[in-house]
Length: 159
Image (tube, rainbow, N blue to C red):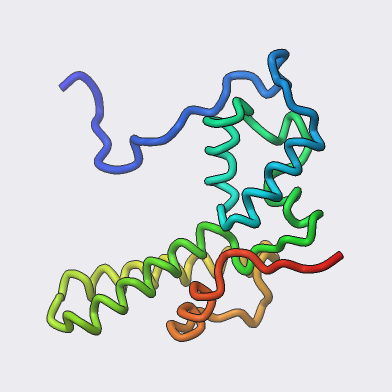
């Protein structure tokens, strides 16, 4: 064996080498903000918006250009996330897994997977409470998770 092999986590995109604004960029910061807001209104999450900006618009990173992240841009335009995106995706997974277990109650591997997933959710909730991204009284509840997932990632507020 040439080197150490990882079982998980090898696949990811590489961040751009320099954190400066590229000279070939054709968009003004206001146009980029407009694109971000439009994509969010279509239902895309911040990570997917970043991928679309990179692949379709040739914008490597938003932060060096605008001086703020995609999430900060959305909050400025009155688009708030119900819960942080990574937690939302875990909640989606848990809701789908519970639905699967209702149809297939003897699937012990799925039960173990749900236990592990809910443990990960609780750890992440504890972290987000500590840093202030979730209110201190927020608790994980499967029924509440179902409502959050059904409602979508964003909450739109009028200015």
